[in-house]
Every structure is written in structure tokens, then in C-alpha cells.
Image (cartoon, rainbow, N blue to C red; front, side, top):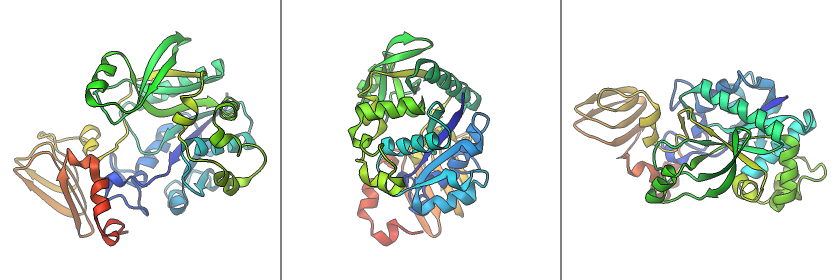
Length: 342
């Protein structure tokens, strides 16, 4: 079985402002380890998929930066999307590219560039199982993460009957409120992680059947500009997985975190005795539960709890862990010169 990795590395990650900017988006930042989230993603997959079979789909504005960051990835494998058109279009183009270079029997392992994985061996083991299942069952396989908390920030997957070590999907549930998320967790729902594994030909066939937003662009040789101009924006979840009857889910329990906000760093970074997650030159005294990121600055905390403090280039953000998830409202209120500083 031929395996390819497809890493989605678009977006800005505005919830990590002021460290994350359009020129230095979240996936290029060293938020969890000493290297960037994207570099961590590539390293994590390398035992499964060689760099020459790894495609990275990203924004045109940072394609050059990614090439410099990842010299082992061939330049032709760093694909700059002409416009953001949703994950269905991005993965469809990746599938066409793999089909062109090899054939439709190749298996695509699709992940995002901005995750933290605590158990990397367990992660790769589940991906291998998913690849075997996708090939054996000719199915679209997603990995549902076993929840560790009733989080309303995720979509959920309800399991149906078991099929050869996997499960059919009863339904995909949109992001619930906290109480509903708690009930779903008790009832055995899984988090919808955004990990997808399938054979190229099966994925393209299902797109042609169920996803008119993309299917019309699959015919002919439009080139990347023509393809992205022709498609309509839709996620692969909404545009395909929720419409197809050929979807299987495999549970995964490997300490996955989507690192969605500054507050998430309390879960994925090493913390001190007071539960503070810090990076950079930081001195914490009689303080607990804080997230501090000092980039070229020094920060001292004294007698405070549950704060997020981010300092860089003469700009400092101070908010609470609770409000860290709503930075978009803050950014919308700031002048462009401050919001989009390099």
C-alpha cells in the first residue's frame, strides 16, 4: 500500500494574537515544543510517510517561509492555494495531485498542522490502522478522539454498528453546549478531530457523487488556479462526510489537542508547581494557573491567577484564561496598524 501524508497548513490562527500574525501564523510558531507546530507535524508523520510523499497545502503568503522551515520537503510538495476554499477543495486538489503523480490506489493520511500529540507512537499506530481499514473496506475513514472533557468547542461523532475494527457513523453532531457535550461524552460520542484517511479513488468518487460544490471542478485539467476558482467553499465534513453512507470511524486515544487558544497551553505545555505554563524569560511568584509567553521580553507575575500574558516586540496582551477564547472580538475593535503588525 502506498501512503501519502497531506498536511493542511492554512489559516492565520487569530486566537494566538499578538504572537500570530498573517506573516507569522500559528502553524509556524513554537507553541508546544522548541520547534514550530508544522515542523512537529512533519516530524511526527515521517516514520509513516517519507517527506517526498508529504504534501503541505498552505497560504501563498507563507509558502516560501515553509520551504525554508522544512528543507526536506520537496518544493513541489508545498502547494499554495490561490484562495481559501474550505477543506473539501484543499483535500480534493491534494487527491488529484497524488493521482497524477502515482495512482488512485494510494492512501491519503490527512491531518492539520497545528495540533499537539502527547502519545506519538499511539497516534501513528491509529493512523496505520485507519490506512489498513480504508484500503480493505474502500471506505472514508475518520479518527474520532476519545474525549477527556465535555468541550463545547468541538463537533462530536456518534457511533453505530461495529465493522472490522471500526464503526459506522450514526451522525455528526455540531458543536453543542456544555451540558449536551457532557451527555455526549457519557454516551460514548467521540470528538471530530479532523483526521481523515482514505484511498484517493474512493475519496474522489464520493466527492463526485455527494459534493456538487467541488465535483464540477474535478473534470478536465483546470490547473490549480482554475480549480480553486471553480469550486465553492465547503468543509469536507459538511460537504462530504455528513452526506456519505461510506464513512467509518476509528477511536483514538493519544493525547490529542487542537491547541485552539492560549488557554490550551495549560494542557500541552510542561507546567510548574503552581500550574503555570510559561515560555521565555518569566518569573512567577505566588501565582497559579497562568499562561505566559515572553518573546524577546521579560515578564514577572506576582500574586495573580488564571491570566494569559503574551509579550513581544513592545506589545503586551493581558487577558484571562476564560477570555482567551474570544480574541476575535478584541481584534475587531483594534486599529489595523496594531492588529496586523508584522
